[in-house]
Amino acid sequence: MTEKDFEELLDDVATTLTRQVRDDPALQVPSAFEDRARLLLRELAHEKGIEVDPVAIPQVFPDIVVGEFGIEVKVNSKNSWRSVANSVFEGTRDVNVRRVYVLFGKMGGTPAVRWGHYEDCVCHVRTSHVPRFEVEIGTKKPLFKKFGVTYEQFRDLSEQGKMDLIRKYARGRLKEGEHLWWLEAKPTKDQEHSLPLQVRLYMRLPQAEKRRLRAEAALLCPQVVKPSRSKNKYDDAAVYLLTYHGVLCSQARDLFSAGSVAMRADQTRGGNYILRALQDIEAEMKLAAKRLEDALFVEYWGVSVPPAKRIKEWLARADKLAKGWVPSKELFRD
Image (cartoon, rainbow, N blue to C red; front, top):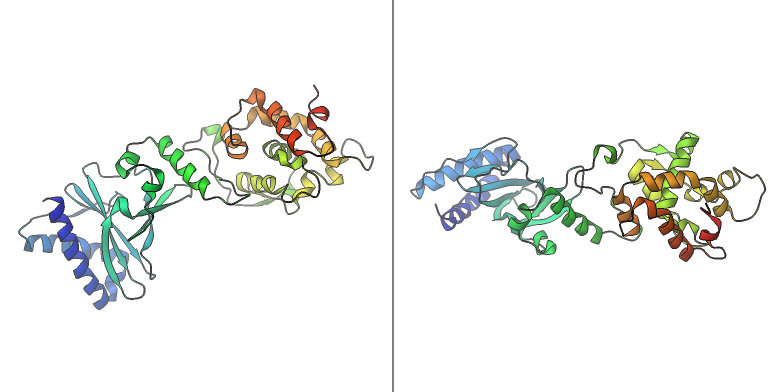
C-alpha cells in the first residue's frame, strides 16, 4: 500500500467515523473510538481490495500500526482539536513505523473526526516530569518549524540533544521573573531533581537548612544586593526556593534584610543589613559554589562558570548591582 493509498483510506475512515460518533455517543469514549477506527481501517481497506491487519499493542507508540504506517489516536471531549500526546523521547515507538498520522476525534460541540500528519500537528511541549508533545489538528504553528529541524531530524537526536532544543523553546516562553524548574535531560544521582510534592514553609525549617538555602539563593541571585527600594529584588530567590526545593517563603525580604538574620553575629542595630546577613553566610555560600550543579548557574546567570570561579563571578555581578557600597570590598576578603 502506497502513502497515497493509505491517506485516501484515512479520508474514508474520518468521514465514516464522523457520521458514526454523531449517531452513537458510545463511540465517543476513547477506547471505543480507537477500537472502531481499527475495525474501519480493515473493513474499508478490504472494500478497496487491500488486505491489512491493523495491530494495537498496549503502551506502544503509535496506537495503531499498519505495516510501515502508524496512527496515533486522540479524543477530546471538549470542542477543541488539541490534546496531550506522547513522550518527546518516543521510547516505545514501533521500529517498523516510517510515517505517523494523527486520527483525532473532537467530541465537544458538533462531533467530528479529522486526521493529519503527525509532524504537522505537534504544536507544543508540555513540560512535566516527562516532557510530552501536544498535538492540534490544523495548527498554524508546528513545533518543529520553531525548533528549526524536521521531525525526522528531531527523532535522530540524542535525549540530551532533544532536551537542549526543548529547554531553548521553553526559555523563550518564560516571562520576566520565571525560571525553569527542570534543568537536565538526565540528572546524575547526586543532582536528581523533581518538583517536590509537598511545599514546606521556610520559617519552620531547621536553622542549618535555612542558612544553606539562603546561601544558595544569594549565590544564584546576586540582585539581592540591590538598594532596598528596588522592585522584585528578591523574586528570583523566592522562586528558586519554591521551584527547586519546594520551600515557600512568604516574606522573601526576611531572607536577607530582616534583623533576625542581619544581627545574628552582632546585635548592634543599624548599618547595612544585607551586607551583615551575607557576611554571616559566607562559608555556606562558598560551599554552595562548590556543590551546586552547573545547570543552575546557566539558568540563573546565563553562563557556565567553573566552581572555583563562582565566588569571583558573583562579586563582579554584585558590584554592578549594589549602590552605596562595593560587595567585593566587604565580602569574601580571604
